[in-house]
Image (cartoon, rainbow, N blue to C red):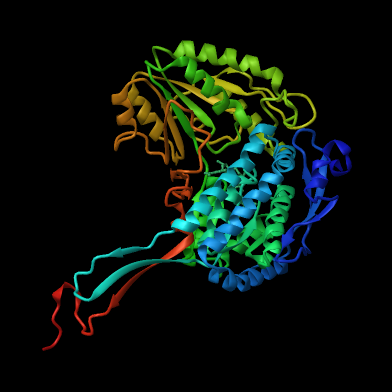
Length: 511
Ligand code: NAD
């Protein structure tokens, strides 16, 4: 167990042990199966986590519902103060928590630390929100009447998260939902349970210090079964789901069946259009990280480069050279030398192998990479592909690995068409110096994605804007802008202080 290895002493700093309890309902108690958490860099067991049984889930839901009454009564700025303290507690644990994310998920340390920083940023954003949460007064057409829009918390919400952002996705939801007055049950990915336990311990420390019931932020480590239980639970007013499109579609239908609310953050198939006038130095710098970084395991990873025919050959050749410069830096994600870590699981390696074989079968050319790296852990070569048609089923699907398809476009307009022709609608980008094309790109006939960038890659969003995508990406929005609205219910209130009853639209009823 790596938890006993002095090289990984940061695990003990986070309160983790050989065997950990994966359920928190105010108390730590679990009766489900024992899950082993593996390091994708070497395939070794880090530690074990006892997951939730159905009864443990029930205890979480009951305790969270009970905790809600006191939590919702707290003034909003007081809830903001708790979230501010959570941000500070995360700052204190930034290094060890980043190291744990790197060890358990497999992304390189700077990105893992960046993910914790993202949670801290959302705490800052939520703190501001706690002083500015709006409610509007509208003019009434009736004398002596006023129309007020009043926002109230939803109550109990559920957060189901994916393996690839084991801290940030919870943070995006939790910090905003807490300020809004909701309590939550978190069902993290069952392949990143230690990160979920460590994050919940940090949140718990702040709640305990402030005499707030711990069940305000409940945790239920488990697999598909616990996810399904949560999705079907009528007490859960909002299910915020982050994961694959296939699972997200089932979740959306199930939640709709009971008229619950859902927020879906699903798969992407993100493209960069390289215009004929693009600054290629800028593009190549951006594309290397966007296509190969995080070993292709971001929902916003660039999977398609739509390159103008004038610069196609140059871009592919320079990209190959850039990839050549990073292969020696594939390795242990915790090492400062490393730029690209492993895939997360053996299943992901199999999916990569299958996709590469299918690319070759369908006449694609592997310009770079294409092989599994023979060493401990789940490492593959970042891969560049040419020669497949823009509408090939392979190009149109998301393989969660570092494979990028280079596709030639005759002009910018065709690039927009190709960008929009996939089912997913998460992130998109154009590299151009042409102002007219920029406005076409962000206009009604431009990109149909939720994230529409210019001269930056498809990945690396900030928390200030709303994050999410259209179409098969699910339509949900999280983080900044008015994303808080998903966590609250809206009442339109009409108050009559005129002393008489008047009907709207001047309707006369009776004499
Ligand atoms: P996944 O769909 O396999 O699992 C996501 C979560 O759903 C896990 O916690 C899993 O245990 C749970 N789950 C599985 N079956 C379920 C069911 N039937 N009911 C309820 N819950 C269930 O996804 P993954 O492999 O962990 O993550 C990768 C995917 O997530 C990629 O497609 C990626 O694009 C997407 N993603 C999207 C965003 C975004 O913001 N749009 C962010 C991160 C990841």
